[in-house]
Image (tube, rainbow over the protein chains, first blue to last red):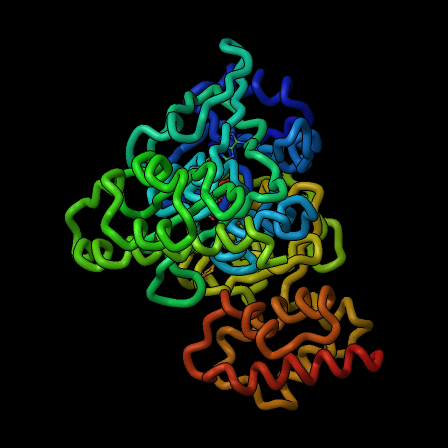
Length: 285
Length: 159
Ligand SMILES: Cc1cc2nc3c(=O)[nH]c(=O)nc-3n(C[C@H](O)[C@H](O)[C@H](O)COP(=O)(O)OP(=O)(O)OC[C@H]3O[C@@H](n4cnc5c(N)ncnc54)[C@H](O)[C@@H]3O)c2cc1C
Ligand code: FES
């Protein structure tokens, strides 16, 4: 038999998490967690709901960074003026599941589940995001997203941890983002190749690049080798570089999709980077 | 056990459930409201759709306790909550011949109700996107899209 709790504040929530430890489970939008509970993979004694956590339901911009609260839904993100400036984020979030899924599901839950093919997570990887976490014992921690995942469906979170927000740089002039996901069906399909890119362009040359890859490796990963190579390149050179091969961070695992992924990932990378480039040069609104 | 209070089809209800119970099971087994169907159980098919505070969502990925203090409407509630008359979306689905076996229709209709409350004059592309999470295996979707357009027109005209 399980009980449920509806904490109203972060303090109340982390006290509960501390009290119940591994017997507690946060259920946010429930789009991953409820199936886990229903199939018996998770058997929480205390279900901790985010429904009353008003302080975590806000999207704010502070010091050049966007802060998405730990209980903000995708629907909220898609309607937010600041998120709308981030082309890649809009595409990634707008592709998740179907409209009814996006009413409830949250970025905190996406990184919480730690699936290798997670869309918002892959875009956050290509946005140099940071995950803000708090627990009663350890206080507040800020974890860069590329240090957040351990292996498939495992992240660094402890049972007592609450994600309070996800933070990433706000869009500035000269900056653009892109997201490409290759799927078998147009909607409600888990991506087979996911590529995210955030780049900065000055006088026709790339000055900074952040690249994320999803659905290839055991977790979403950052493609540092691509980031380094892109800096200093023109649009055409960048395009050629992206097409030239599979980024070494892809770490493709053997599966029946390996060959498909090998040949399509460079194309998806090229498209994501070009999409970001066009936004950086003001060619898209 | 955990006491959950919520509004169901306009009425205040209180139940005592395990916090792990799903809303689809509560509706079907405790309230005998069988319009929402448990089908995939994974959030993919849309047959279990209900309105949660006016928005269409999946009741198979919703714990009943998540509805404490919230409002749920099922297909059974649409007519009583519309003064005993069929909701314009229900009427339009009948008139457009959008229903074949009927299995997906409660979900389709509730998804359409929520969608048209937000978008009074949708394009075909927007309609297709709105119902993209509701699977129909016999209709081919064409008449369903016609029905959504008809319902939108009627609702704009104040039906
Ligand atoms: C039909 C369907 C289609 C889907 N399609 C996609 C898709 O295309 N792309 C994709 O990426 N995902 C998809 N998903 C998966 C899912 O919707 C996402 O992973 C979603 O972001 C999870 O968010 P949630 O709020 O529902 O998480 P929940 O299910 O509530 O929680 C997930 C996990 O995160 C933990 N958690 C949640 N919030 C916090 C917090 N604040 N602090 C600490 N831990 C927390 C929970 O304890 C749990 O372990 C789909 C799911 C369904 C049902
Ligand atoms: S039964 Fe809930 S979406 Fe299929």
